[in-house]
Image (cartoon, rainbow, N blue to C red; front, side, top):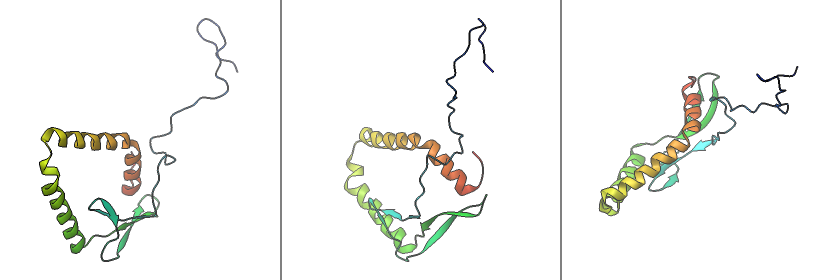
Length: 127
């Protein structure tokens, strides 16, 4: 069946309609099999060696294994944060720190759709 516009002219659709993917589509995300702790600017295994599963409660499938931090890991993270603050971060002007924070916010904003889908999978609730 051919569609016509208000002037009676045939509309050309070239046989396809490209629609945006559904918000809950998972074809644009990548979930790693395992996530480590991010301490002192790098990823590291938990000192206990323990990981826990992230499960999608909607279908009970495992999404990933997440590193479980213990007291030693938290101490390492706090010491690294204190060293970064005392060594560099506190010496940067507020204006310059603002630029870094703004850039981080922009990166999160650019990944907002991907983060929403992953959080939806992890929490089991629709977007």
